[in-house]
Image (cartoon, rainbow over all chains, first blue to last red; front, side, top):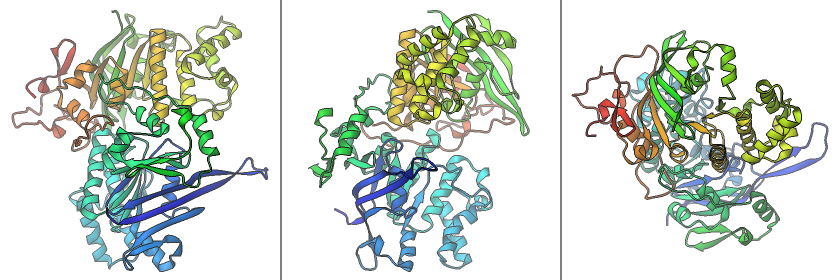
Length: 317
Length: 322
């Protein structure tokens, strides 16, 4: 077993919403409601679930883009060779931590500044973190463009995002992320906007880079087929909670939670002679069960490495 | 079985600032009564242009340069606007891409569907129309209360179901569904696909299903066409195309689609990008990306479909021993 790079315990992120402009009544949306998982070095965890289940909120809380409500996030500190809570980090350490944790966004059309050329876009993180002199930085951009397959780099550096295709833009996003040599990258549906034939080349690129650079991923997607290709383990999320977590093939072959079964049975199979059987599930029922559940230990290990939520779903099976 | 729709050698181009874009080139296919026909391809391959031309709803700068579209034996291309209005919705209707966002936000769902029915059946009373709408809601799995709701009160999946009810409101014979589930997540997509299949069976409709997702096409269609750069490169029974794909582009599409069943396989990507269709070079448009390209290939050869098996057509270049 490899050491953990990241440990998340009971992560919660609540949002306060008011029911109207003049209303004083505030209600709380529990977007992420006490989730826990580990990410070992060089491994990738898939986070799957329907829209609105809290996948992206989790990602933003882990990347420190939004403050979490409660819970602990421990990150491996190389200097002390031990796990350190990110809440304890002081200014300088925090900046260093941010280098190690990067994010790739869903939409390559909106996440790149249209008025900057590719060189400046990739250079920006180096400028912010003040790494090397200008010559070093430009060399780093040149190298990273080669790594992500935008060759020859000198042709791409002066160009602007609108001159590139979707696949090329996503490669630029990946280059911008990896130039900081992060240990952990959060990917929020990075291929869902791309065409099928291009999608695989981006997924393969990310898999190869993970191996070469020892990067760990948290890979967010709603498509289990994509998660199967990309991830060592998969966590299934429903309404802010993780309901099942296991190694990829184990989860797909022996799903236990009814929601996981429903999700797997929803994926179209690229084979016309395959007869897919839909697993029926009453979502409002499941919602009630999860909402009324106040268990101390939310997940139980049913098999080595296979965790399932302990709320009582027998009525649904 | 009778053909409800026949498209013969359809070519279509758009006039743009940058030049002429040949979006659809020499496309032919037929849809039988009660059949479900799929069109699959990447963005910009001309799928939506074909769909729009079937209703003669192409953009102002688009024109049909060649070919015929025969619906029930009538050539749609030659019809004038008032003749077209009688075919649209009561003959052919369409579920547009992103249609769930096309509801008027300040008009109740029921009223918007009634509006469409009134246009085609002005003699029907409001009560008759309401009854019809409730029947349709029942078919697509919507609660009857939706009739008095505003679009913002519905979820994405419900709005999309209502769009399907709207498409069915004037008893069309053929429905074109252009990526009807693209903006929805997998569970909702699954429910909508199921509704569409049910509707098609119950009402005996013909369906043209357009998607970039070959897995959805596999489940939804009897026959299919694979489009690339404005042309059909392979066409035939869905089962046969999946079990015996002949065109190298079809093979690449199949090899690049992940699945949750079966052994985990290494997927193959296709190098390069689809070509620009502006002022297109003559010759085979797939040649620059073709994994089976040989020196003996003639890059200037135009694509041409030949029949290699009953009703299975493929571009002549790939019909050989690939």
